[in-house]
Length: 198
Image 1: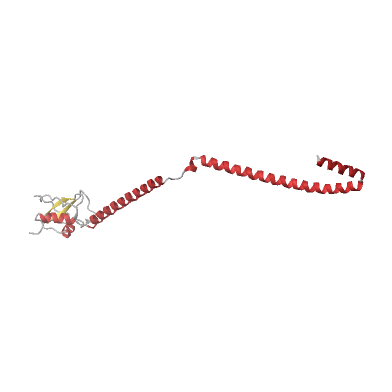
Image 2: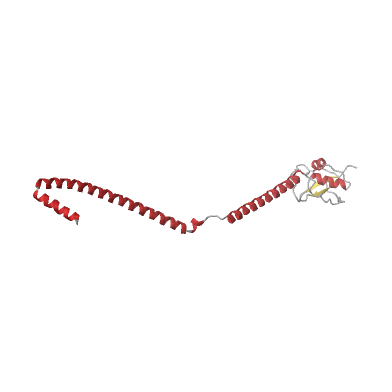
């Protein structure tokens, strides 16, 4: 009420005093411009705050969506980690056992490969000398033919004949069979075994 009467007094005074009214209008215009500037600043600040609030609300909504997705809840419990550690340890133990087995197998293979050539093969079975000995291609000689079997070597063949009382050397077998390759004996091929000189 007091404000209305104050305004009425001012209007009445301004109506009877035109210079005062113009000064009052100019001052009022300046104040109104300032107030309008403050109002515009407040409105701009309010818009900025509203945009920030909307951005924060969007972030919160995104976070809620992520939390509700199964992939976001992939946290491992202590039990899960212990199970995983046990599985890794089991795999490491199995790998160590496999490595040990491989080493043992390699050691066996190296022993086999370093053994003497004729040592791991069974000696050839030698047929008794035939009564009607054919003569070798190199000329008349006493002896007999032997058919090479799988796993035979000239050393083993010579030893088997020598063990039966027919002394013969690898050199004598090679001399009696020109072109024979002692490192490449052909299974099924017949070679001439010379008889020991009387």
